[in-house]
Amino acid sequence: MMRTIRLKPLIYSVLIALLIIQVVLQNSFSVFQYYDEIIALLCLGYIFVYSIQNKVKKYLVIDSLIVISVIAIGLICNMLFELQSSYKAILIDIFNMFKAFVAFEAFYIKFENDSNQRLGQDILRYLNSFCIILMLPGFFLAIVNLFMDIHMHTEYVYGIRAFHYCFGRVGSLNAACVICVIIMTGYLSFLKDKYRKIQLAFIGMILLLMLSTLRSRTYFYVVLYILGYYYMIARKRSKIKMRYVIIIGVLGILVSFPKIEFYFSNETTARSILLKYGIETARTYFPLGSGFATYGTSAAKDFWSPLYNRYNFGNYYGLSQDWGAFLTDNYWPAILGQFGIFGMLLILWLIYRVYKKCIKQTDLILKFGALFGITCMMVSSLFSPAFFHFSAVEKMLMIALLAVIKKEKGNEYEDTDISTIA
Picture 1 (spheres, rainbow, N blue to C red):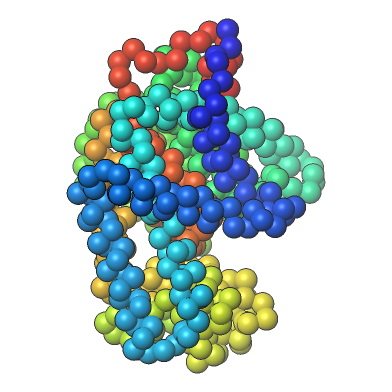
Picture 2 (cartoon, rainbow, N blue to C red; picture 1 turned 135 degrees about the horizontal axis):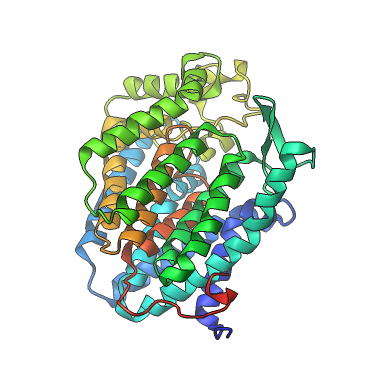
């Protein structure tokens, strides 16, 4: 029989589902260019209201102090060096810098409350259905794409069409696949054993769809998922030993080495240049960096940092003021350049605290889904603006939900029709 549709989790699910397809929607509706920022603002408002009405949690105080410290560093550098005079640029940069972490804190606070547990489970159920409906046609179209041109590819890699489905870019499809895998892994925990095989088949299809993008990091994500599932779920191990972390790290480097070599050993590529001058900026303005909206971020691009003229970025492909498509294609160089080594360590501490919250989850499946999500973001941050990207908000929302939601014995969904899964 069909389960009753509940309005409140449906509204949450629709809002998050729109985040997943934001890149598709914004091509037709310009307002969706700011949709992730709108959601982040709502999350920020929720945190403020919660803080006023309730006793503030210790972890929220610590996380807030880390964020305030980074903001203080950036603002001090803005005042000292006066590289960015636009208050609008600085405010935009501050918001984009922390919107993903704001989203994480909001959902972690929301679903830490026992009264919201059923709400969280239903959100996962509805989003699970959405992910299957969205991605299943993509899986079959990716197979067709191998044999004929259906105009859903970005480029050729080793003579094979790199599939982008309806997302326009392989990177956007990859990001959507990652969030769907996080959601579907989380929902796996609330299914009885006889339905888990069907769910795992759907997850396997999305992992294959992810591979169809032919991006090097996706190979690592798929291997990470398979090994993580085997270690944490199949073998029921909750503790992650350091030697396995090292092995996974080495494996990731080996899998990604061709791209790492291309992007960072070639001094003419945008990522190599951004890394080089990110380090140069940190050295020039040691020890605190150059300040907000001055290097590597969207605000620095839109309000054109004077550092870009100093570094002659106009002479490089994709880094000029007229066409700066690659000016934001980085994360850690921007963090290092704008906040120096101290600011970068604070951001690393903030991400580490997200990991700690994920590790506290006692349910192995939920813990694995959360850890998979934050690890994918961390790996992606080595090559892209992972925590600045619009997809970071949706990922952090779901990572927080999986990290804090509770599963009590006997609360698995027991439907006997397809609505259990989809």
